[in-house]
Image (tube, rainbow, N blue to C red):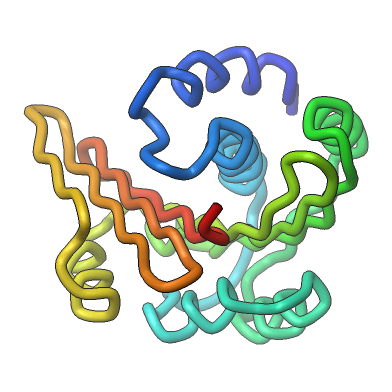
Length: 183
């Protein structure tokens, strides 16, 4: 997989003002790159429930997230040293990351990372091809979104919940969630 081509394609989209809500451009681009890598990998297992997703996404460390994520039975995504090197050079610190992909593409892809350095952060990203009920489940857990925008092509929502930020975006039949530390 050519991650430079993916980064070039995703970079402008992630850096357009307002496209990543309150989650910074680095987090959005990282999520996009990881999800593209995850989507290219085969896997096995069941759909991800909101409770399991939130349990993994609230992990305090990558080993904790790894242990919880591996219990899903999804295929673990291989690390990409070239991507890691580029991210660390851009971010100014290290990044630990783990990701999984379900066998059935509609069941989704999940990644969790902790970055250190000047732009250090902890974040989690979940992407799914059939988002029916996902926005409702997030609203049920986090309450009414702080912002909710509906467009001709999709929906975005954002929650600032305690020390956590949650962004949801849906375009057509695909949706993604990024959960991270509030800055």
